[in-house]
Length: 263
Ligand code: SF4
Image (cartoon, rainbow, N blue to C red; front, side):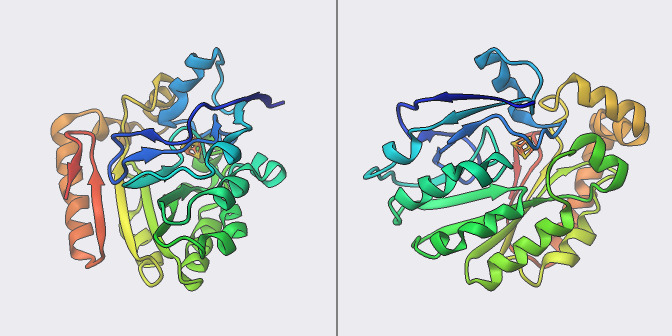
């Protein structure tokens, strides 16, 4: 049973240091997709909740306070939730926020859900919008263990294709990249015909939390060994970076967390 708390937000756009964005907008905090490695899990402590995926904060006035506001620079939706998690189907809060948002705002959306396709009509009204799907290679037991409630990768890839076919700039966020679990080359091959550009992100083991670390160590010790060993991980990152560079695709960045970016 999901706990839903309704609150009122004071301002819609919050400055951010997320690569490629100047502001974030989070009409929800908390996420029913409940990915085990999610870096936003720490938000639970701020609101007094424990288990990630068991609660959602709904900023119910967001569609009202976004009206008439404009900010320079790119706005990223969302950093503390997925704007298209299941509850959005019923509440339509994201849709209402988008409807009321100034269409000259440079908006970047990232989701793991094909529910995003519902709002293509509004995306078309924006002057500068990029809509991305997070994809990785998690299927079967791995998917059930670490991304239990998000739509399948195949659905996300189809959504990416539909976004592109509708004339909206599409991007794939290949994340998290984990040795032996994420097939970067295959994902590029499957998507490059309809993906305008890419972002890549290696797993941030520290931010993924102890529960996830324990799972990875036990279920995939070889992956854990690479990712927790600096020189092995460096070698792995270099191999993947070569694959990306040889693929002749447009990419905006490779987020490594050690240090932060490769261009
Ligand atoms: S979809 Fe994104 S925000 Fe939601 S749990 Fe997964 S990683 Fe976190």
